[in-house]
Amino acid sequence: CRLVRPNIARLVIEDSKAVLYHCLDNSRVYHGTPLSPMEFEIDDAPALEQLLTTVEPHWIMVKDLIHGDVEDKMEIAQALYDEGILATILADAPDRSVQTG
Image 1 (spheres, rainbow, N blue to C red):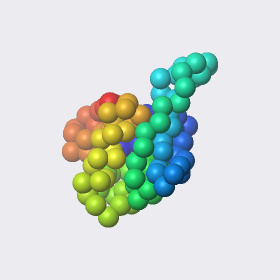
Image 2: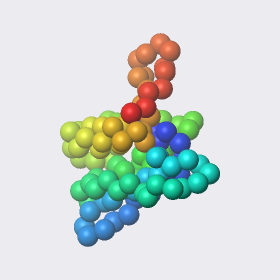
Image 3: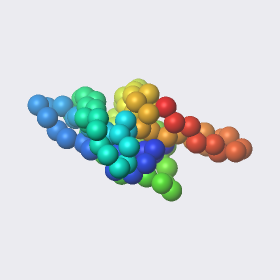
Image 4: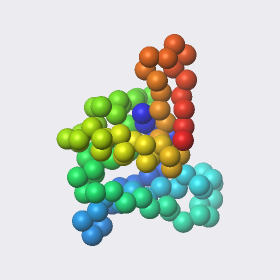
């Protein structure tokens, strides 16, 4: 998985939470929609940072995210995918087509 495009999200620590702000709903020319915040637990921050710094042409597997809990890795990736800011690829698929949320 990786971001759908570079520089669409920022990670900020606020009140002992990892808050990810993204601008996916905005065009690249005019930013008319406010940034959309997503709150995560503070221990999710290293995995989020990994995802924010993985951009085209690179990919990272969810299992390789920095986090001690496999379920948390999946929940983080799923939340970003559902928001539409994470692209995924099936490593075993012959066509390796990219999917976005």
